[in-house]
Image 1 (cartoon, rainbow over the protein chains, first blue to last red):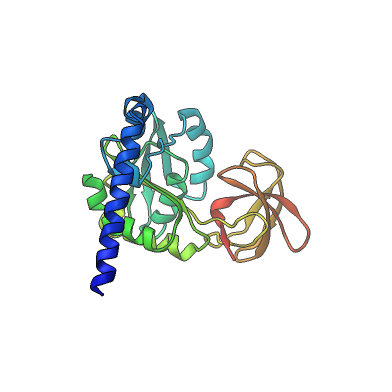
Image 2: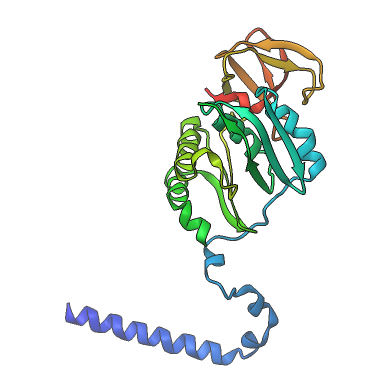
Length: 118
Length: 138
């Protein structure tokens, strides 16, 4: 066991010296500007790359909303700068279905101002 | 990061349910969660968690977009509230109705026209566009 441990230690040390040596040999690595861009300051971004949030344009939301809300009589949807505002009345058991349909249209935000009856 | 904490249970559930292409982003005080699953129950469960954290979806701080619609080439069940589903000539409610699929009928998804509309074929051979929201993977 001890022998193996020692061998491992020397191997690791050897590797370390090798890496150190190779880095020294290529000073240009540290001066390239590309590396500075790749390395993010916030390490959470490396775990989960932040792709931009897709938000539908108002005219596209206005075109899609009638299809999404047509089975919910009593519900009115308006759009302003990506924000969808829902007004009118709906029953509580139907609310999730409506929200699923509207959430799928890529709005910026949804203001749920609906009156819920039961 | 505040919203990620508020909706932690939802994000954790999405992760453990194996949602594909799961994206969680926070922008201008709104959290955006996107992804897809072939299982309608997984989507319903995530929506139940959302409703529990934010009762009646009042806060306006989350856009949850989980696509559980049937993929092209698969069978889908018509999951309307109770009525028949209109089959249209083109993708849009302004398009002519060319047929109807019954509530709970199983149809074949030929392709997806866009995020809202799918081209389907009934067992009777009728083909046309339906609103994807009313199709659930069979």
